[in-house]
Every structure is written in C-alpha cells, then in structure tokens.
Image (cartoon, rainbow, N blue to C red; front, side, top):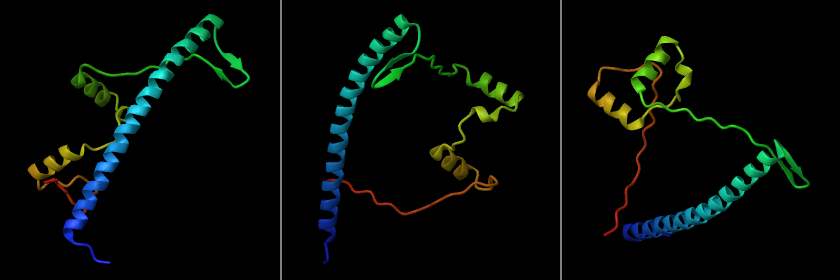
Length: 128
C-alpha cells in the first residue's frame, strides 16, 4: 500500500497531537494524585512524630527519615573545592549536548579523547 507524502504528514500530525493530548491528560491526573499523596504524607509524618518513630499497620509500615538535598549559590567556589580535593565524583557525569556542539564548532581542532558522537537524520513536521 502506497501513501502520499501529504497522507504521511497528515497522519504524523494527527498522531503527534494525540500523543500531546494524552500526555496533557496524564499530567493533570498525576498532578491530582501527587496532591492527594502529599496531603496523606503530611498526615503520616504527624503520626510518626507523635509515635516517636516507625508505625506498623497490617497493610504496611511508615518510618520518618531526614532527606537532604544539596545545592550551591557559588559555583566557582564549589568547582574550586572539587578541584582542590579531586572530588570530581560529586558531579553528574553528563555532557551538555548543546554546549558540547557549540564548543566543537568553535574549536574544530580540539578532539577530546573518548568523546563519542551519534548522528542520525530526523524529521521535523510543521503544521500549516
């Protein structure tokens, strides 16, 4: 069965729109569930605090713990600390795709050892 380019583009747009709508609906559903979960979590934290720790029920147990999150307001100082202590493991090992592309375009003679690239053709479909 042969399809015209017009049919392929129309079908592509229809599928893309359907995916976007389902994703929007799912985001709304998940947001509602997360709000409900947050309310229950606050109640369970209060239960654990009044019980002095872990609470067990026939369906499951709840324990309170301290969750820590770290961030910096001074990247230069953090980079220097990491460098001074050879603590590069503190950072995520991930390359900024756009920044690397720009760097390589601006420095065509620089070839970082071990750097790999995967190129492939993609399509961009726009609606009229």
